[in-house]
Image (cartoon, rainbow, N blue to C red):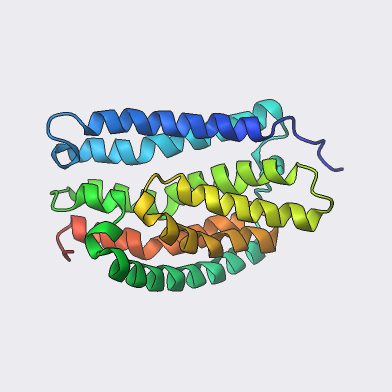
Length: 240
């Protein structure tokens, strides 16, 4: 028996995005104290990196529970090995896009302007093994889950709910909008174009499978090498 239509739409996504931005603004205010981001303790870097996205994702899950059928039905979140396999394939494609995109982008804007905000925060900052591992696991595993819930989950489903004439156009519109909003929402203007390129294979995983797990796996696969690079840099194994 099919689940009834959920009772939430773009308003739910806008609320979640407001929660994300408000949390990020609070972190920004925190970063501006006592000399700026470079003086921030490692503990604050971890909290400031993880908290906004986790809080926003939990808000999204709560909305699907309170105003819909829960995340499994509303966000098309279910376990299928075929989705995992396809997500891995799109993740490999995403890694190729990322490596080529970063190379080209760093030549266009300079390496100092192509570095992510997280990388800039931990650059030349001593970090304990436990803190570095927590950062690695968040960037590789947990962060992609949270971001996919928000963008390829909540925003995607809200977009599909609109009247597009047919299901094919609805899914394509959801792919385009979620890809664009995902890139812009990172609040890194110089890297927005690069983030658009990186986001395309992740969105394709959601588009092709019709479910969220594929894009989660693709996102995790895409984040693995950057997360590993940050881990090794934080541990002093390699340097920028």
